[in-house]
Amino acid sequence: MAYKLTFELVPEECWRANLRALLTQTEWDIVRKDAYKRSGYRCSKCGTKGRLEAHEVWRYDDEKASQTLVDVTALCSACHKVVHISRTYLVGEGEAAEEHFKMVNGCSQADFHAELRRVNEEYRRRNEVEGWTTDMSWLVKKYNIGLEKPKKI
Image (cartoon, rainbow, N blue to C red; front, side):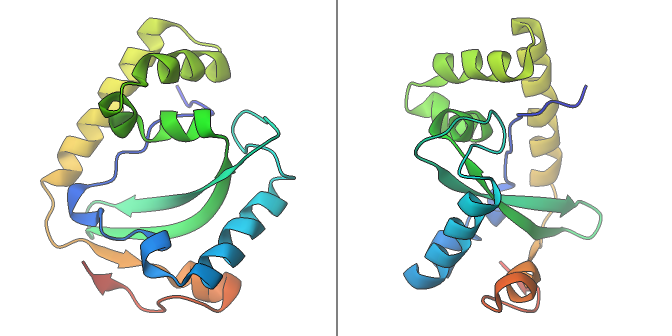
């Protein structure tokens, strides 16, 4: 089943490819504020108005060991905690994230666990791959900032 809101577990080798850390504060502000504007200043997953957070959307090609930045979206804090469920559990907020996942997707606890198993299996497979590259050319195309060519991380 395709869920509106799901979990995104980034392969460990790609953890250093974080836009907020790689861009200047001015560049990051341009990207995140545009994401908020494009979403109508609402969470792109649940539609909540209020304080938003910018979230990087990556596409993975497991055979080519590449992660490609395809968007930066606006998420409310609750949806962002679901997306980064591993960290959310580590800081003791997993139960609230489970409830939010079920509410946004209109699904059961069993559905939640099935999706978490699926994403964890995908994460395990991706961590077996070595030599990931990161392509941030989307930043160049959309904002004329960032890295144009894929880089080894």
